[in-house]
Length: 357
Image 1 (cartoon, rainbow, N blue to C red):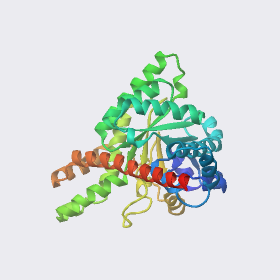
Image 2 (cartoon, one colour):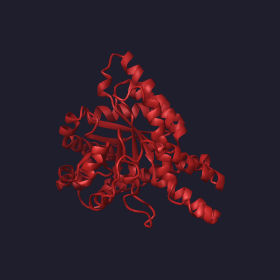
Image 3 (cartoon, helix red, strand yellow):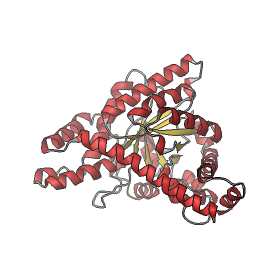
Image 4 (cartoon, rainbow, N blue to C red):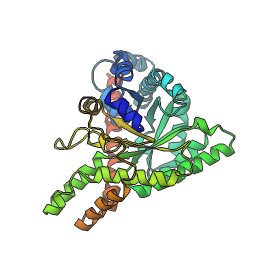
């Protein structure tokens, strides 16, 4: 049993945070499924921007789309949907074996719609229909404006990966949106056992922002708290998850740990895996982090259950030292949206230029 299989025994599913045509064409995706205990894939605008602007894997399809007179947005989604369909097919056996819990592939709505409920719902519906695979998840950001869209989409039987969550307070709102959506789906006569959702917390980005503020404060007490915010915040979110779902653990909205590649090379490469292992969770990792876990291990059981009190002490210490966590969360949410919009815009510009030449 490798270390990722051990992680799965603890209760954390490993999803790969990457997808590309090259990975699909080379057989690499099937290989990581077979050899690395990967049971799902997540994508985002930055991942597709990196995939579609490098190498030659998309050249033939771009040439075909150019001949059809396609504009950049249509072309990007045509290529992304083809990739997601192929990935869904690769994971279908896992999806069936886990009753839909794993074997999932996520595709995100246009990040420019992050504050537009109607546009988000309409595109989520379109993506669900076009991918046409039961194991696809539509990613929707957890902005205040998008929370009702999450409910609307779930109510139609569409599985949702709620992304860009930073605070426990916002997470509680996400759970409320999930529950309302599932209740409406039941009222609509849908089989709710087929509808799944995850709530994606971004971990390393929190440490990067908080660490910079701690270094600006510069006292020994402040510097001693570096590298602790991301894990503590996720552990506190997990305590909220246990509280919110304690009466119904059969069909939960699992917490998902995202942004789990360490940004600071001084931190262990496996920090956001070994310290965030526990039942009913997902960890979506870049392949470098997957390889680090396989090589280094370092697992020491369930590090989430019962960690809430200590995690709260860390966040309280940050508050005492002068770190405004409410401001941190607000900054990170806006930055998260802005970064995805920038990646998406750059991708559209690049594909537009290739279609024109």
